[in-house]
Length: 117
Image 1 (cartoon, rainbow, N blue to C red):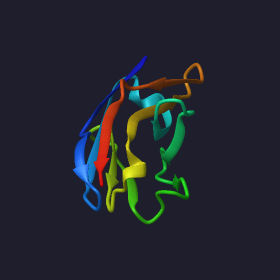
Image 2: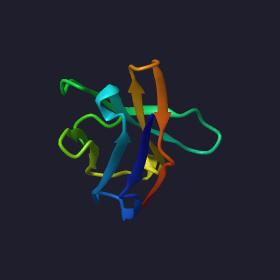
Image 3: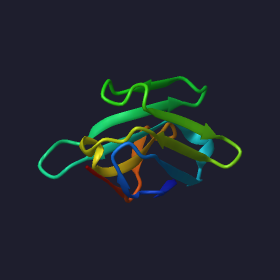
Image 4: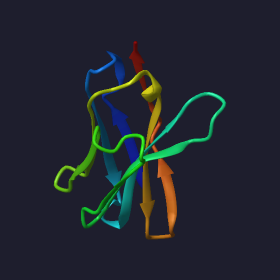
């Protein structure tokens, strides 16, 4: 099993920056993809950014050029650097992992990001 724990959320003014971290534990060698999703009340959870085990990344159009996803394989940790934050980025951010042993996805508990105008 793989467990995910996020950290780094908080309150920031528009134009500011935050870095989210997602630490994976357990059978981390079985992780194929990791990603960050976000959700606001009343809306579906949406993909923000993803990164493969080989380092290939993809981003939602709304965050391209502002957010950067990266991973430190030695620490089993994925990061989301968020710059030029906007009030529309306000959401609960969730870390996600696709695990190939059994082909299941697992989620972290979520971390709140609030951007004030």
